[in-house]
Length: 430
Ligand code: EPU
Image 1: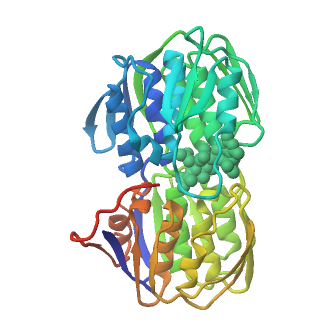
Image 2: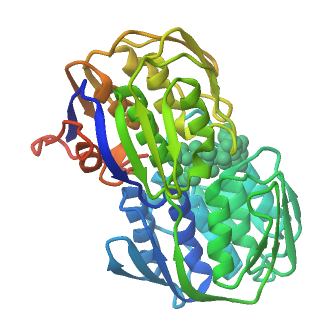
C-alpha cells in the first residue's frame, strides 16, 4: 500500500511544469489504430492511464517504442484484430475509444465495457447511438460491446447528441475518419482535447472540420499516413496547481500551459481574490491575502470544468463566507466531501448542490482518495492544513497526475511517499 504523508501549512513558491493532457492522450493513442504508418506522439504524460492504454494496444499487436521520456512511436499497421481481450480495458474509461477506432479501421470491434471514476451512472448510449447511425449493429453482451458492420466499413451520416458528451464526440470522430462519406456531429463537445484529437487526425491526413464548435464535420478518407504530433498541455493538471496555490497561499509560475484553456478557472480564482497573470505559455498565480467566497457551477467547456470541482471546493472551504457549488455534469461527484469533513470542512450537499461555509483552517487527518480528482483535492487540502495529512488509495491520483509528489515538493511542499510492502498490493480500479 502506498500513501502520501503531507506536512501542511507551508505556502508554495517556485515554478512547476505541466505535462501533456491525459484526456487528449488517452484518445490520441487509440487513434493511432487508424493510421497506416508510424505515429510519433510527443508530450505524452507519464501516468498509469496512459500505460494501461498502451498495454492494451500492444496486446492487440501495436509496435510501441519509447523515443524519450515523453515521446513514443506507435505503429499499428500490422494489427488485423478488432477484439480487445485485455481485462484491464474494463478498468479505465478511455477504453471506450477502442470501439470507435477499431470500428473505423476494421468495420468491427469487440471491447469490454469501460470502467472509470464512480460519479453515479455513466452510460455510453450516445456513443452507441452514433455507431448505429453509421450502420453498425451494436450489442452489449456479457460485459462486451460488440459492434459489427455488414459492409466492413461504417458510413457517414448526421448524428445529433442528446447531451454534450466528450467521450461520444471523440468516439464518433474516431469511427468517422475512415468512413464512407461525410459524418456530421451536432451538439458536439468543445473541450480542448476534442480540438487536439482533430488536429492529430488531420495531421495524419484526416479531414475533420469544426472541432471546438458544436458542429463537427468529418469527411471520410481512404487512409491515414504516419506523422509527428505533440499533445496539448493538461488543462486540469494546470488548474489543480492553480487551486493548490489558492488554498495553500504563495506564488507559483505554472509553465507549459495554454492560458486560454485556463480562462474558466482563472475567472473564478480572480473572483476569490487570487492574482493570476498570464504570459505566452505560463501563468503566475499568487495568493497572499484572504480568499473570498464565490459561486461555481460546472458545465461543459468553456464552462468551469467538472474535473476541477473537488479542487476548487477545497479553496472555497477556506474562503470567507458561504459559497454555492453546483455540479452540472454528473449525478454524484461529491463522494469526497466526507473526507474533507474529517479535516474540518463545513459542507452540506443536497443533490447536485453543495453549500460551503468557509472555515479558518483545515487540520491534518487520515483520508483517502475516492477517485482521481477527489484525490487531487485531498492533496490540496493536506497542503493547506495545519499538521499531518495521510492520504490512502493514491493510485487513483497517479492515474492522471505525472510526478505529483516531485512537482509539489519542487515548489516547497513537504510530501513523503510511504510504501508498506507487507500489505496487499493496491489494484488500479478506476
Ligand atoms: N452521458 C450519457 N450518455 C453518454 C455519454 C455521456 O448520459 O453516452 C452523460 C454522462 O453520464 C455525464 C455527461 O453525459 O453525465 C457527460 O459525460 P461525458 O461523456 O462528457 O464524459 P466522459 O467521456 O465519460 C470525459 C473524461 C472525464 C470528464 C468528462 C467531462 C475521459 C477519459 N474522461 O468523460 O474525465 O469528467 O469527459 O469533461 O476523457 C477525469 O479526468 O477526472 C475525468 C473524469
